[in-house]
Structure formats: C-alpha cells, structure tokens
Image 1 (cartoon, rainbow, N blue to C red):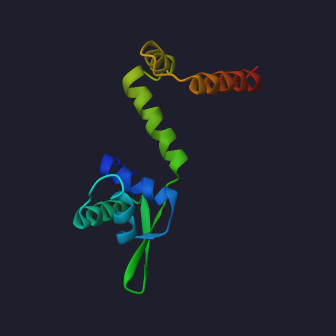
Image 2 (cartoon, rainbow, N blue to C red):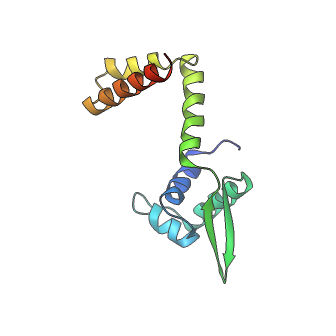
Length: 124
C-alpha cells in the first residue's frame, strides 16, 4: 500500500466509521469539521482507489466506497514507521517525551501499566 496523505487519511477515517458511503455522504461527513470541496474529495477517492486502500461499487447512478485496509492494521504500520524513524525503533523515548511534557493522562498511565503487566505475563 502506498503512503496515505493526511487528506486521504481524513477520508479513510470517515469510511472506517461507516461504509459503504457515496462521495456525497463522505463530503457531508467531512464538512462537519471543515469545508471540503466536492472536486477535492473525489480526487482523494480516486487516489485511494488507485492505492488500493478503498474499493467502490456502482449502484445505479452513484458509487459506494468501502475501505480495503483495516484501521487497526494501518495504525500499527504507521506507528511502527514513526517510532522507527524518530526513535530508532524504541518506544520508551516516545513515552518519556510525553511524560516530561505532562501530556500523559492518568488513563494513559493505567493503560500502559496494564499493557506492561500483560506483556510480562505472556513473555515470562
């Protein structure tokens, strides 16, 4: 799968919430946050089809779009890429940066503790 731009990612997020959707339904959903032009969204949809990130099915006079990639697998791939590029594949400097800047919430810390405890049980 080719790299997904930020704008293409916004389209994918809409389709991950609900699909299949028509171009007009996608535009309406995107317009909740900011104004998107119809031509721009249709260009993004075409790019995503070419990248095999989404598919479409023609139904009467409209096309219905569906994601071909799962949100979780995409997030894992992008997270691993970011951590490799920015932190030489190490997660702890990323978390330490958030902790130093007070960007970790109590829920984040609890989740991390639970993940570590689960990992330790599975890898003893």
